[in-house]
Length: 263
Image (cartoon, rainbow, N blue to C red):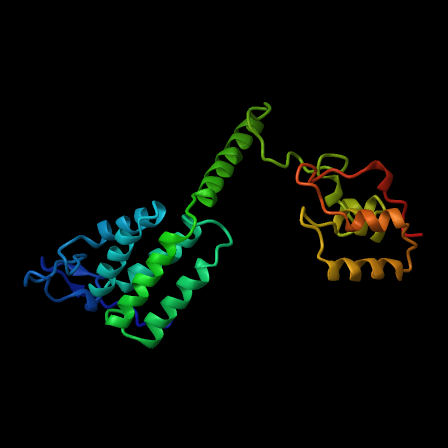
């Protein structure tokens, strides 16, 4: 959001230096009647400190501090900074899939496209968004995964250059047919095509879903589709295709469902 906003104009700071980051809306006086310095909020705080405070408050689920920090940035002419940061927190500090991402996006749209960001409506949107973020499940899972996978990649590369086995490996290993993840090599891959794995293999292995399984309607459609297919699926194959993938057996398949071709 916010792509249609006017670009921030270059202004001169109190020391006469050209300040290309300063939004004209962030000029004026502090609450104490003194001219605001570059990157200073109305309350006399440094905006970088307030922005960092907002992130830590979201991360630590401190609703009041998060609400204040958002309000301070919005009223001081730094709403653009606030919305940039809140959208970053969605991917850096909150649990994947949480609906708060859409909530924050909607509040930003209202604050920037309908109302004045520093006006009372914009400030309320800022507070609502910060509260929503602080109330959402906080986690560093994506950031931790990114850092871990990056370091594993470095370790693998260093080991290969030294002609040694890596001390740590990606969770998928080498991804070869016959390995732990053999079922991924269906007819949609070159390896699967060379192995002659067609629709029978895909329907009974590659198309199965997680521990919740299909709902009744989807299972009914899948069963009828397999019954009506040109391939004569056995009842055992149909039942297996509809069976949920066990949580502790995500990548295992019984030997009796080895592909017999699409005869």
